[in-house]
Length: 58
Image (tube, rainbow, N blue to C red):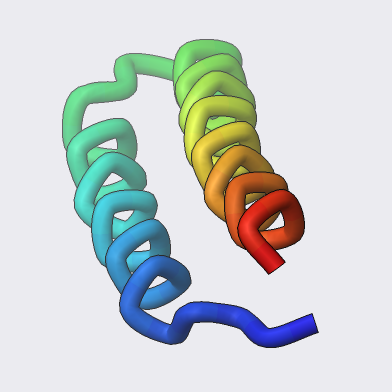
């Protein structure tokens, strides 16, 4: 399985940017935890869609 490094780095940078925003804006631990969970779900799905597309093309 060959991974596209640009795709991975792009997702990581967007994740870190979102994480920074969530940490700054969260008022309590529950809000922080919920925000991190949603962010993780969003970028995990983005990563998996990109990998599925590559598997189909190969």
